[in-house]
Image (cartoon, rainbow, N blue to C red; front, side, top):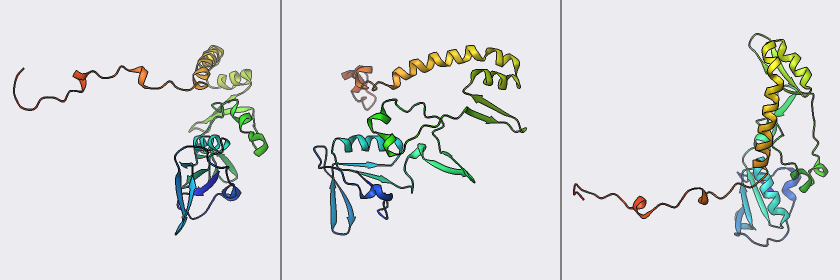
Length: 205
C-alpha cells in the first residue's frame, strides 16, 4: 500500500515506500507520478481518514495494490491528533475510542505497529464560563460526588441514568457490530403509475 499526497508533491514518511503484492482483482487504476510515468493500482482510495485507512488496509491484506491519497500533511482524519493548545495534543474529533471495533486491532495487528490504549481516570470534562468544571470519572462514586457539587438531586438520579445508558449501549453495540442491510429491501420498488411522467397540457381524463 502506498500513501501519497493528493497534490503529488510528496508522500507520508516511510509508508510511502511500501509496496503491496500483485493485484488479484478489482478495477485497474492508474496514478500518474511523473510526466510520462504511470503506475497501475488495483484501488485508489481518496482521503486518508481512519475509515479510509481501514478499507485500504483490508484491500492490501488481500494483496491488492492500493494507493491512498490525502490532501492534509497528516493521516487519520477525525482520529488524527493535533496540538490544539501548546503542549496539549488531542484527537481532532474522535473524543472517544468506544466505537473502535473490538476485533479490528487484533485483526490488523495494530499493537505491533505502536497502538497503545490509554485509559485515563477522567472520561470527560465540561468547562463553564464561571471558572467551574464538571468531570465525569470512570469511578461512578467519584462521578456522583462531582455532580453533587452542582446538584444533589441530579447526583441521586445518576445511577439510574447510567443504567439506562448501559442498556442503550448494549443495543447500539449489536447494531454497530453487524453490517447494515442493503437499502433496496427496505422500500418496495415504485409502481408503473408512480414513475409515469405527468401529462402535459390541459386535457382531462
